[in-house]
Length: 172
Length: 453
Image (cartoon, rainbow over all chains, first blue to last red; front, side):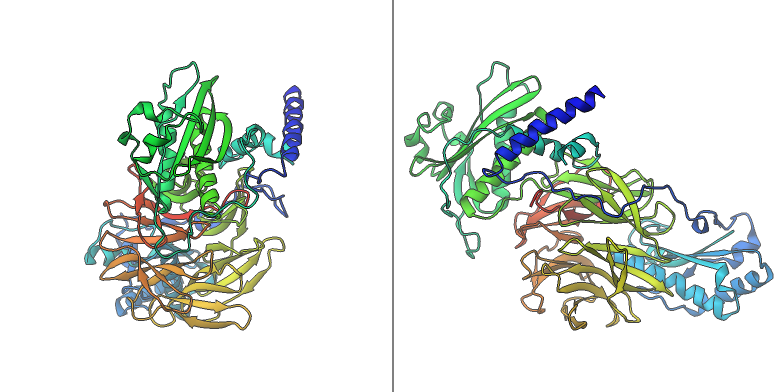
């Protein structure tokens, strides 16, 4: 309380001093705006994104089905191999109706972060659209883009970039 | 108003705020009355302005405490480094003169005859003392040819604030001699990789006073300052999805402002501070540009195209937006005119991957990152698409350009040392200077507005 009073006094003093000199110099402090329409910050987690787990590497059947699908440079169209993988995934999803799928869209690290976030989003959605066409309920498919932020392999060579331009699958 | 701002703690820009109030209170003496209409000594718009030779000898310690922190040399060096980087000054080596000739601080003390042999046309003198962890300093600028006092200031601040004091006086010198505001008190916010995450950091424009703004242990990207420097907009995955957040810098408080399905990325504040342009992918991952009204939270769609549209940047008059689109088959820079919703492409023939546009504060140039021969460089072009200039060359990848608020300088990231770091340069590409160091990669710098402007 005493601290507050002290601070307040000091502020009044400074304010008076500042205003008395107002004509002689510019305002130096950043002019912090009054808050408008702001809410208290809440910790919030999107459960849709949070609970998905990577395909168990010790499960040979699931690993054979949920292989990463690969994309050409700066492209989001599905290659014939990607379609073949998605065909198997669609079958599995239809015979495991309680499972929910997360498709992550990724890019290689060439190019610009923001553009790659958009590209990764498109890649994930290409795969989702194809699965929906094959009869998987769209409510069972989530997508997220990580752009170039989550490479499988670090480095700069065509073979590394090829691996990183991918759609990756998680289940819950 | 002042009591509020004083009572709250902020992780960001606290020193600036604190020092600003403090300096406002303590900046007491102006030694002579500054002429009402200051003479402009340097024409900053002249195509080949000659650099004013200026000398900044180490400042005199007039106090009883020894100069344990070597403030004498350091403070003089901060001012010379600022002036040198501006490109309008040539720093004369003070070692050309015997120390005893440089002891003078006031007009009567300076040995004008001996100074003239150095060729200096201006001199900055300083006298300081340190007590109770505070520094008190008088700084003066003289015309060395006429032996005439131009202006002087007295500052008092904590020892930590000595850099701010020097930057402020360098800005005063710049303003006095050019008639344009100096920007040496500005800062840069950038993204740093920490482990598998990315967090936001702040540093002064020269790289000093680095500190962390976020500890989200997540991917945090694309910071953008509000025009009054009070807020930052950015994208973070802290809640799982790439959502858009606002950080109130004075209060150190963050709120989520856009969390649509898909991406909520690449924010850019409108010049009037009322809207944020951003990229959303509301339908099937097709990213389009929108504006978000900060008060009403109303969204307005800007682009409508099957191709990827991303990274909007307002023109300074708020009438246009530069953005990136892949509608030609690969990413190129386009301009959207708000009044008639017309879209035109401005990058042709120079590489097939042009991104990250930034519109100059004067409106006459757009800088961007363009890939040619597998490498990114910073390029500059007029909004009509003419007068192309390449600003960086043969030094790794150079990306993420952002203008200083006065449009005289550019900050960008470069991996020319093998690791991505933050650099600054003049708008013509000269004076390239690395400002960050350490083991972690740094990206996507954004230059702050001039505080209080």
